[in-house]
Length: 478
Ligand code: NAD
Image 1 (cartoon, rainbow, N blue to C red):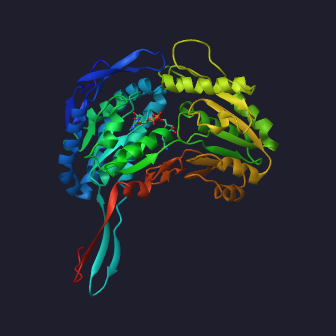
Image 2 (cartoon, rainbow, N blue to C red):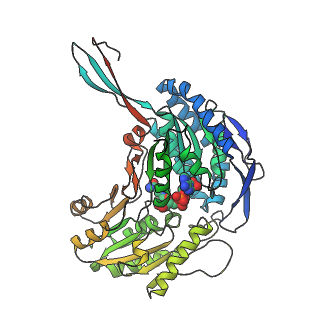
Image 3 (spheres, rainbow, N blue to C red):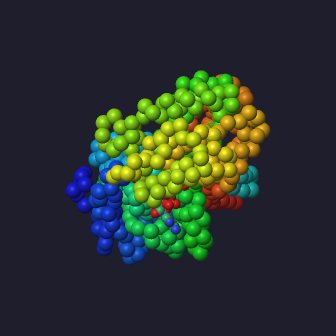
């Protein structure tokens, strides 16, 4: 089994290694060198992957639920046995610290195990002398899973675990910015799953649209930006595929005056700047009550100055580089715009020239509500701090805009926080914490943050269709 960057990365199609007919380089964002070549999946190879998944589907769907559970645990065992190589690859390609990369690999195995604690429900609609009617949930067929670059393995877990548990087969596509750990994952799982049940392909910009339009894929489970989500939905329309879309966000955090400043400062810092803010559910604009604005802003800035940014594989580094060149340019553009508008930076700002996509955590001091840094999803290490003094006003500002992914409320009084939480237009609202997800808890976006949801029973059902069977006269066993 290959473990290092010296060994070629191969796609997994029908349980076998497949090299691309061509390849593309994957960049290390910490020094802009090419880490490795990834296969560029040709249209014929995608057809082969989909055909393998289609051929494997009847037997996999017919496998006893308990057996599929066992195989998901087998996948988790295989991943845990390969944490070392997987996290070394992930840290370098994704710009993560070794610790964060290790947590993500272990998160994937945790997700596979955690999902097996859920079962597909059956509803008895009628059980009379005349008839018995039961609705159960059947798998959809071949799932195309399309994953972004911020959590290549984490997001894979959200899709793979429920799709396979529900009885579907999968064609998995990582982002071209971060394909390597996912390709290695495919290699690790080749001996665990029957051939064709999980196929892993990698490629450039043409591959995702080919998957969404592919006539023999039944569902696309997509995580990425709202703009791309629209294209996925349009691409899927021709073949009437089901879609789940987990899209962008501009999550507000609302901080009431009755908080413990140092505790909330540290939690909020990581809730906004963890993985450099490249987290769909990061706090992306922080509304602080004016009575606590000055002390909290100082505490956040003081904390930010202690955080070490650098190559994530170096000991003691807490934040790596921004993951890729286009995202780096986008975040720089937002910082430049703030500077041009005369906003005050409490920390960070434009970086000095040099190799690697490094930006120090940048805090912007109370910019106008209509500025780009407040209105747009930055998805990077720059955060606007804003003030408010009226609850109705802050709720209106939090709910403005196209997104509705997550939100958080921070207060010593949970009843007051709860009353605010209930009025927020967001798929998930946390009180006094942020980004806590588990395989058993459903999450998804309102408004333009998505369609459908992942995780929890709703996330599992999203990989199924209801089927009602009615027997007359009533027969037990339906
Ligand atoms: P992106 O939309 O550029 O790419 C996501 C994936 O889609 C990649 O694998 C990409 O290759 C593929 N893709 C690109 N064009 C496609 C097309 N036309 N058809 C099909 N697939 C296509 O997103 P990104 O830059 O990789 O990720 C950042 C975005 O993802 C942010 O907006 C972030 O908020 C969002 N995100 C959302 C969630 C969530 O759960 N809601 C989680 C993580 C990230």
